[in-house]
Figure: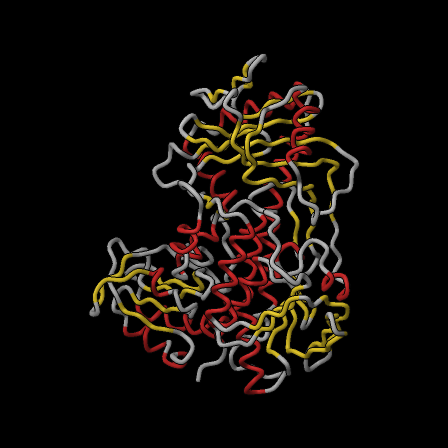
Length: 519
C-alpha cells in the first residue's frame, strides 16, 4: 500500500481530515489537482460548531490571531432577514472572518506539522476498489501515476471526480440566481449613517439591511465605526460562471446598477466573491472503501454553512476510518478488534442526518429570499418579529450553527446527554485544574469519571489502550460519568447518583460499539 488513506482534494475538508487522521496514527496522502493553493476567496470565514471543535483541538487561538481586524458581532443574514444574536450573553453562533485562502494556509501548516504528505498537480482520472483496497490513477505533469490505499475519500468539491467515478447519486436542485458578496471601503463622498445605512451623493439614503427591487436583492453591512463595508447582491441570471474566474469590481458595480439602478462608489475591494446556490445531497456517503465528504457530499443553498459542515464531516469520519485502518493492519480485512463492524457506516448515518438538518434551514432561506409578493413580505416580517423573543432566537442560532445536532445512540434508554456535543466542564483533579477541551487536544476518546465511580473505571479496563480514563470533580456535574468520542460527542453517560450496578453493562456496550472489542 502507498498509504492508509488517499484524500482527494486539499481544500478545508481534505486538509482537516488529513490532520485528524495523523492524530489517530494513520498515514494519509492528499492529492490536489491544482499546482498552487488558489487565492480566490470562495468562502469568507468559519462559523458554527467547527469553532468549538477547533478549540477542543487547541487550535482556535491560532485561527483567531490570523483574522484581520476585530471579530464581528454575532449578526447573520438568513434568507433576506437578519438573525441578531447580540442581545444574548452566550450566543450559540459565532463566526471568524477568515477568507478561505488564509484558512487553507493554516490547515496546510498544521498538516505540515503533523507530517502529512500533500501532492499537488495530481488530477484523479480513475478510482476502483476491491476487497483489499482502492486503486487511484492520478494524472501528473510527467504522466499518470497509480497509487494503492485501504480507503479513498473524495473531498474534491461540488464537481467531485471521486463521486462521479464511484457512481454516487447526487440529486437536487440548482437555483437560477447569482450571488455576489464584497467587502470594500467606499469613496469619501459616501456617508455611513449611524444606523448602518448609506448616504450617496445626489441620491436618497440606502437603508441598512436588505433592499428588494423588481430586479433582485441588495444588502449592506456597515458601521460608522468601521471603514469596511459588506455589499451583497442577488439576481436571477442564466449565465454559467466559472468558479475559477475571479469576480471584479466592474462586475460588482454592474450588478448593483441592475438591482438598485444606481452606483455605490467603491474605493478599494478587500474581498470579491461570486457563487450560485444548489441544494444537492449524495444519497450515500460510503460505498465500501470509497467515501465522500464536504461539498462532494452536499451543497447548500445559503452562505456561511458549507465549511462548518464539511470540516465536521472530516472530524466525524477520521477516527472511525482510523479504527478501520488500525484494525485491518493487525487482523486482516474482515476481522477488526478496533471497531464494531458497523462503525464506518455510522459516518453516513450521522453526517447525512446533520446535512439534512442543514439543508432544512438553508432551503427555508430560499423560500424567504426568493419570493417577492405581499405574502412573502408578510412572512419575512412575521419571521423577523419572532426573533425578538429569546427562545426562538436561541433555537434559530443553534440551527444555523449546527450546535443542535444530536446523534442517535444505541441502547434501550440513553441518557439525555448522549449524542450531544460534550460541554466544556472545568475539571479539578489531583494534578490541578483542567477542562474537557484540553483533554480532547489529542483527539482520543475520553472516559470522564466525575463521581469517583470505581465500577465505571473497572468496566473500562479492557479498553485502556484506546480510551483515556480521567477521574475529576466538577461544579454542578451533569452526569456521574461521560464517555466522549474523539469528535467531541457523548457516546454514553451515567445519571447522577444512579445505582452502581446499572452502569457497567451499558458502558461496556458503548465501548464495544464505538471502540471495538476489549483487550
